[in-house]
Image 1 (spheres, one colour):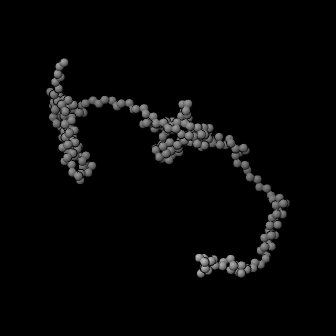
Image 2 (cartoon, helix red, strand yellow):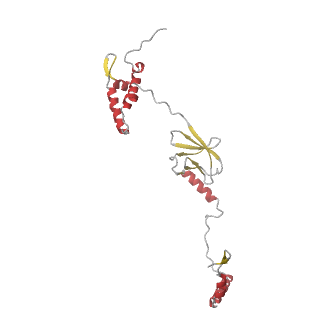
Image 3 (cartoon, rainbow, N blue to C red):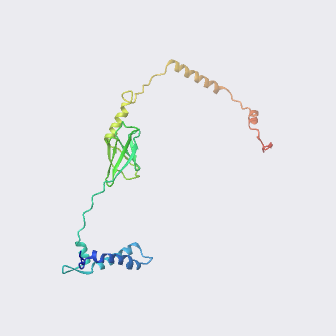
Length: 227
């Protein structure tokens, strides 16, 4: 078992990186006043970083700077996106719709009241509506959360319209209205009503003020006559 000597000018091993972080979090941070804005603080930090990156170093006998060494360091590739999937249960409405995150999405008709799963893989722009057996009923582009959007696929709209029209008993759905002349019985009833109205209008209406006064007599309140 031997002792490995730390090579010279290796920042991660000699603590230079930790020292630079200490300068920023300790000395530079303490120089900021209470009235310094965020933009002013960022500008001061940028000036400090330029000065720190300009420090002289040597690599393999060649003079260089801290900033040049940092730019020459290779970075590891970005890791693959974590395949997290958000899955919630929804019930299909009578209008062949389901709700998700403040928006409405369409599904094919014929599944009213059925429980389905809405799946959204984090980071993707699409979502899927899947049955409990794994059959994908619909796939939509996801709308922003809480937008109140109604996202309907054209094929779903056409299928729903076809189902609605098929439920009408007649063809076309709205029956035409036929205008028929009044019957003899209807004409006789109209003559009787008009005669009754003329008889009432021909009578003289007499107002009985005695009955009116009795109806509007002051109401007794609190044991005495109301004034």
